[in-house]
Length: 154
Image 1 (cartoon, one colour):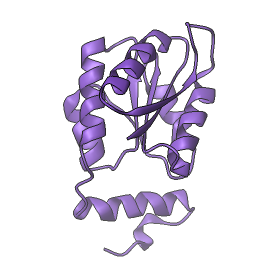
Image 2 (spheres, rainbow, N blue to C red):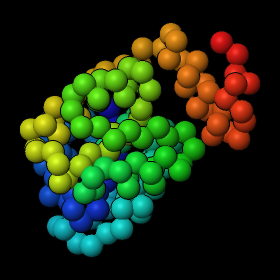
Image 3 (cartoon, rainbow, N blue to C red):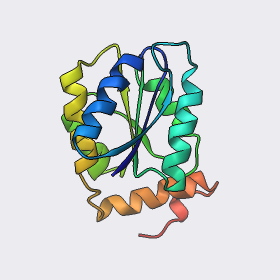
Image 4 (cartoon, rainbow, N blue to C red):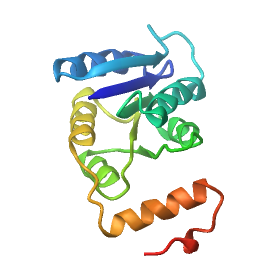
């Protein structure tokens, strides 16, 4: 799988380790944002990762900042992106199965290395469940297109 990963300065060390972990799992990784802890504004890394995911250059994305919240907000401004702040394996599973999230946003300040590895592993391996959830994704897509979500038929 092609994975785009990005971080601001608070997530730089963690993305070093996640990049290595993903490579060991057989994924191809493109990295954006801070390297060696150099200052970086999170919207820049979020935009680069989100653009790769939205264009199809990357299958999924991983973003890391202090809380994951800023990255999620910025990434979700790119059409076609569904970025979710995830705190554990369960929320990773639900973000994929129910929301078809294509970018996971992680907190450098609240999560340890092993927890992040497990979260990313679940996020990359789980599939979208479809079914009743597909209708909801269609409604999210309608909002993104500027339409009223209730206009989407079941």
